[in-house]
Structure formats: structure tokens, C-alpha cells
Amino acid sequence: MTRLAIDGGTPVRTRPFPDWPIYGQLEEKLLLEVLHSGKWGGTGRVKLSEAEKQFADIHGAKHAISVVNGTVAITVALQACGVGPGDEVIIPPYTFFATASAPLMFGAIPIFADVEENSLLIDPERVEALITPKTKAILPVHIGGRPADMTRLKEIAVKHGLRIIEDSAQAVGGSWNGQGVGTLGDCGTFSFQSSKNVNSGEGGMILTNDDAVADMAWSLINAGRIRSGEWYQHEHVGWNLRMTELQAAILLGQLSRLEEQMRARENNALILTGLLNGIDGVRVLDSEPQVTRHAYHLYLFRLQPEKAAKTTKRDFCEKVNKEGIPLHEGYVALHQNRAIIDGIRKWTGESRVFSCPVAEAACGKEAFWLPQNVLLGDEADMQDIARAIQKVVQSI
Ligand SMILES: *Cc1c(COP(=O)(O)O)cnc(C)c1O
Image (cartoon, rainbow, N blue to C red; front, top):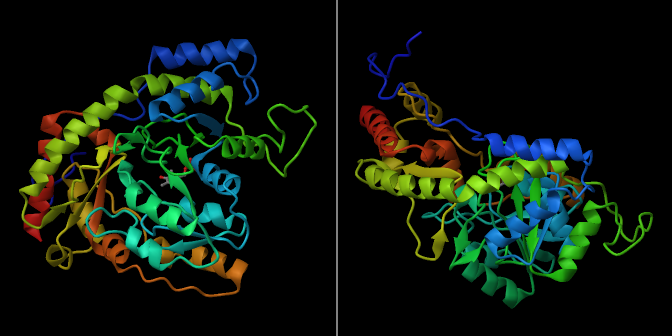
């Protein structure tokens, strides 16, 4: 069956984009090594130690601790940084659900600071205005792979005695002022879930330069044990949240492909930005010299408000999809999510209302994204994307 374009003709693009995941003989070899070692679990230390070391080195971190996924990585990181029930954690509303559900898992309260108009990242000025005596931490999210303004956020954290946990799930390999994400705050968390730029099926990592945070995170992940202790010596209320050796094998294979893939995404994103910039009605996000490496998990752009007002997100996306481009509508505004609001009420007894107009406009009308694998192709692919978007924008 041939799909028809929005004008009933041939779609701008009929070829597929690069497949995801990308893997080969290396992953196969590493997996078999783990298989034959007989040590498949998270205490085996066949490949896990090497995967942690490589991951730490990529970001310039002192410690890397593997964990089952990126959601629990946030929960553990918060607790390892001393955040407890009733403490407030300031987060952006334009992010994946887990950024808010991770603190709520143990009664810490997410407080939403709106995002910046030009980057869709947490707005440091909004953060400062929301600080109360209950605030314990700031949890910025490097959404789409672009680091948040860590310089300003660190100034605010130091001034108010707050911890910073970077949700870097989308930003493997990213850097701010030349410093790796996950090492800029007190600690950073990562995800290796299947859609992420480094994928081990499921999996996660916590990075930190702080010895005490590292020890506590390790303990929480390892049934409350301490690194130097006996097997049945439990010093904290921890859980078994260990990643497995099988995942570490795939992770090592995927890490070997990271640099080449990052370069392809960076090059193609630059080309695409140039092309989209020339389309009337489309608005690319501002570039920022302090973003020394953008990990491009997502390529985000917006429609100008006047254009966005003439269509719905669903309709715009469907039309671009019909032209053969996998455009997504993106996130719902988390500060308005019923489950999150109910979760906050459950712990505090209060119905909180947050004002985040920039995120509401982005989620409701204006912001769209392309997944990272479309950036792994070539310049002709970027031209197809731009042509399809231009065709649809002109039609509304
Ligand atoms: C994917 C993601 C997570 C959660 O990671 P999982 O491994 O899926 O649990 C958290 N935060 C952000 C921003 C993410 O994109």
C-alpha cells in the first residue's frame, strides 16, 4: 500500500530513516563472554566494572554506579544527596514523567519551575523564586540532550545551600563549558532504556565526584550493604536495584559507537537548523555557546505562535508523518498531570497549582521533536525533513 501525501500525491519521503538500535558482532561477542562466564547478575563484575569506568571517563566523573533504570537512578540519587520525605525538589514541567514520579516515590515533593522560552530548559530565575525553607534540591533536566544553564543553577544552589541532581537521561556525552553532564551538580543520572542514545535494553547510571554520595548510592542499590562490609551487613534501608552483566555487555558495545554517532547527530542537527531557520512560521531553538556538546536525543523546534494557532499539534504531526517524517507531538505539561497533582496531595494534603505558561504553550501548541535516529543519516535526509515541514507549514 502506498501512503498518500497531504496533497494526495507522493510523500516527500518514502525511504526509511536509519534503524535503531544499531549493533553488531561486538555486542554479540561481549554477550557471549558474559553468558559463558556464568555470572549474569549484578554482582558478577565481568563487564559491569569496565562499563562503569568507561562511562565515568566519557563524562570526567570520579564515580559511576550502575542501576536498573533511569527512573530509579533519580530516586537513589536524591536519597544519596540527603533528600527525604517532605523535602521539596524543583524540577521543570517539560520533561518525561519519571523526573516527577521519582521524588514522589518516597514522599519528596516536585515543585515545578517553568522553562525558558528560547531553550525549553528549566529557567533559573523561576527556580530562585520558588525556593522555600523546605527546598532541598534542584533537579534540572537536560532535555533533548542540551544541558540546562548549570552556571546559573550552581550559583543559586550555592547561595541557598541546595543540592543539584542532573537528570541527564537524554544527554549521554553532553557537556556544559567543556565539563561533562552529570559532573556539574552533586550528581547526575542516566538512562539506557531502549530509545535512549546509549541503549542496553534497560539500565541506568549515577555519576558523582562526591565520595559520600557515591558510597550511599551504591549502598541503596545493594540492599543497604557497604562496599567494604560483609555480605549480610546491612547499614541502610536499601534495595536490590542492580543492573545485570548482560546489560553491561550491550552497554560496552554501544559505548564504542557513541562518539561516531554523536558526531553524526551534531553535524546533521546543524544542517537541519540551517534549513528550518529559512522556513517562515518555524522557529528553531537558540544556540548557546556554553553548550559545548549537545547530545541530541531529540531535535526540538517550534511553530511560531501565529502558525500554531491555525492548527492542532495532532493534525500538524499527522500531516508531517504522511510526508514520511517521524515527527512527534512531545510531552504533556507535567505540572498539570493528574497523577502527579494527586501524588503531591497524597503526601502534603495540599492541591498545588503551578503556573508554567511557557511549558503550557510548548506542550499544548508549539513544540515538536524528531527522534535521535533520524539524525544518524545524511544531508539528503535533513533536506527531506525540512521540505516536508515546509510543505505542511505552507498548507496551514
Ligand atoms: C528516559 C528518561 C527517564 C527515565 O529513564 P528510564 O530508564 O526509562 O527509567 C528519566 N528522565 C528523562 C528525562 C528521560 O528521558
